Image 1 (cartoon, rainbow, N blue to C red):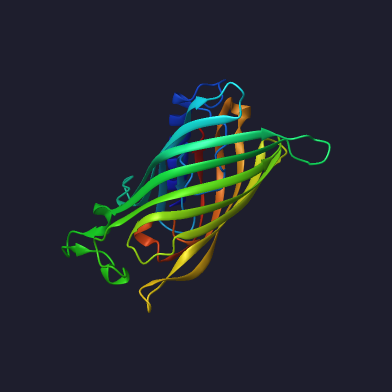
Image 2 (cartoon, rainbow, N blue to C red):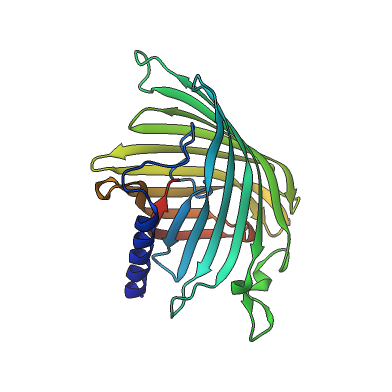
Length: 285
């Protein structure tokens, strides 16, 4: 298992090195820097689980299409897929489920006077987005001709998972650190017996040697099987420690360790808890 894991990471690093400009920064810049530890931020990432035979594969990016000459306002787009795969022999990765996200964003940024506050900027990002999720063939048992673990889903399999939402994040930032607060409102959701509100908070800190620490915390609606609806909220943490590969000329590539504890980030499992660690590669385009 360890040999396969090391082989996967080396292969991904070679691929990234072959397509990433050696001296260039991110090719698609956003006025609002993507949140480092938010597991649903559009990104390119290969993150194998350390404690089980699973793999997270994310493909996506955020890009500003318009930025004002004053550097205060921007309009952009977001696209992302978040795949959950198994890891089997012979380099096979059956896809269990995929989440698809797309939307638009509006950004505002205001420089701050340094005399009174330890921050350089106050910024805000407003997103209007759609996300849907789907089970794939890796969740189907061909020998038994049935979906795997169908009895664990409160809706049966397959079921429709679709959400449209508004997400607002406010951030105070400087060159070496950032703190933020966020709020999300669902204006349409299937299944429909879901609380419309969730909250978010986080912090990021640059540390020596091009390393960093980041934490993202969310209060997400918790599904009650007895009531057959969400009732109350569940805290969900994602803690990340990373190293930017600037020394290798890969300024937009980072190695990252994540510890995740809380409700699953995947829509097909939104009612379920996950606790796991990952170690892999993230590319910031």
